[in-house]
Image 1: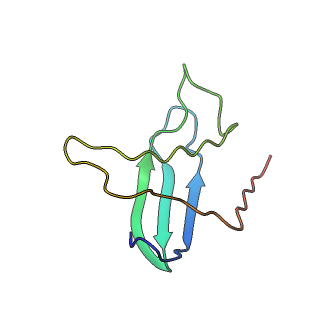
Image 2: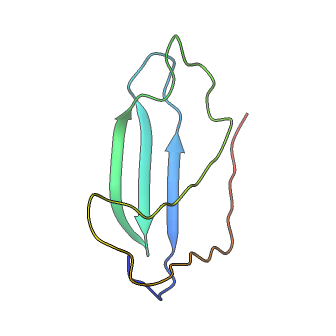
Image 3: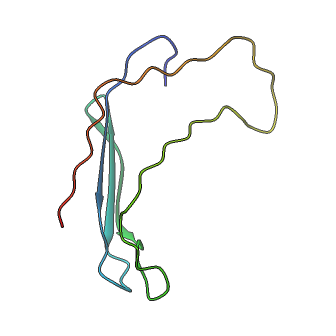
Length: 84
């Protein structure tokens, strides 16, 4: 990520079948596919909630270093959709 520059993110989640490791996760940044997984386990016998919540919690952190400036994240045009 480049500080001070707008970026375009697009993410696709495709729910796995119950108990199967066949879910999909794809992530594009600025039009370039940077993550592509098709063996994701989203739901199983003890966790059948499916996709019912969205939470984004960006946090500065790490194991070393000190912040040298204030960081701001500006978000515009968030769109979430799903099928029943």
